[in-house]
Length: 239
Image 1 (cartoon, helix red, strand yellow):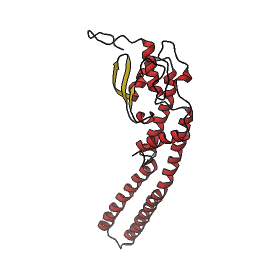
Image 2 (image 1 turned 90 degrees about the horizontal axis):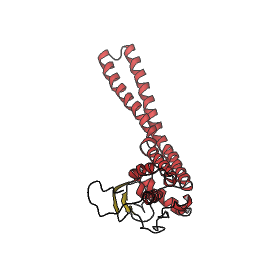
Image 3 (image 1 turned 90 degrees about the vertical axis):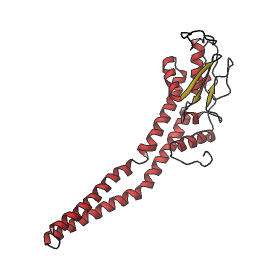
Image 4 (image 1 turned 180 degrees about the horizontal axis):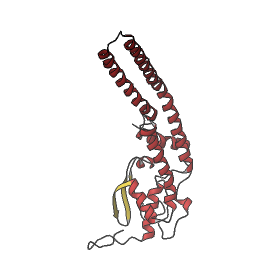
């Protein structure tokens, strides 16, 4: 809040309780309930299974190529021992085959990790953080709330005792509506967003921070946006 350390400031002091309530509301807007979290992790699991299945033919092809190169190396060695291929020709062809073998050997682990490392794991980590946001929003640890707020937003302002900022993606994808901006709804009971936290000095009940349980359509809509962001699914409607 404004401490007026840098000189005169037209903004009034903000009580810590009101400041904490606004941060809680901002975090609650992007928090995933247990129902939402389990739904999205289930969809992520389906994506992982699909990715593994789609990579199976490519992995089999690489393994087959490696087997064929090993057979060629054995035949080349036999030909050299029998005298039909001289040393110079043998070493030249062997070098080419060994280079191909190394290339395929390096490609195999990349295929095995494709999807899981580059897309699925970051998405899973994000969903876990979004689920943790629910606990952060209702906690009494103001410092933890501040740190979490820095993670989910940017371009922070405090005007007329109201917190304003922009949600950073992918966090903004979890906010209901078409705007990624947060503007505390003034000194009123709710701001019409996902959260509905009291702005009075007394703490609101934890359950009052969040709205009713989301519908399956709402959860699927959020997943489509998150999945598209992490390049897991391609949602034509969202794009």
